[in-house]
Image 1 (tube, one colour):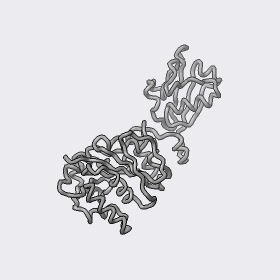
Image 2 (cartoon, one colour):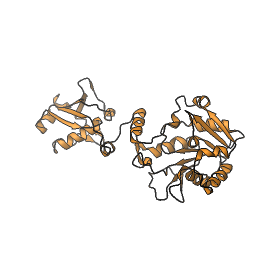
Image 3 (cartoon, one colour):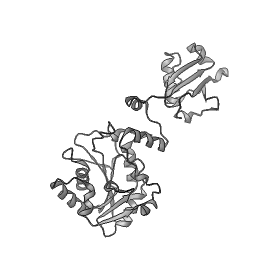
Image 4 (spheres, one colour):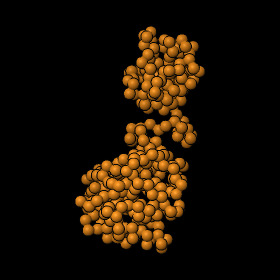
Length: 304
């Protein structure tokens, strides 16, 4: 098999998202870090292409960073920058972007199997061609991209008219990605929230607040020592997760309940019950909450 590298474009202006996609939290990592991790499992080196002054989250040491010489020339300029930075020994280059959190590593490998004597393996799925989920022969692709830039032709999809192209259909790609999740990209905040939910993650509160998205109101019932300290039996807070609800409780209690959380974990002196239905384990503090949920906080030493 020919050598396989990857170019990952992250220098877009993210106007519809309203913030840098590269820095968006996605579980334990940022969106850029997630996509780098996924594509790095099948391609090396990975070249991340950024805008001239763009700030990026930390990346693994093997990842190469290249910056566009100018801003505002779109993904074709980013592709040119990435291909030029790729070592000449690399024959095939997979092109992708920073906003594809469900990239399937088997996707570029499938394209590598199919490209054979062609210079571009171009997915054509869901009614569109996808030049930023495609595989390129590095050397001829770089020549074609630079020619297009000189002619101020900036649409990457037009590369199929300049390169020997193998169109790859849905049926071939569904064999490695049945739901075509590799093609899910995040253009706006609503799509980002849907992607987090699909991945099983909860959006961070500051982002929700910045978007003006209301968090659910949760009632926390206090028993035993917590009730004695606070002088109340219930406190209402706005929070998306159990951990956030406890942090808001500490704040609302004005110092009388400091120490409920230690480094993100519930103090062993307390236990939590959700809606009177089940007790929560320490690993469930990131459980997502809904409007009207009730958390029961009990002190174990007095039995509630």
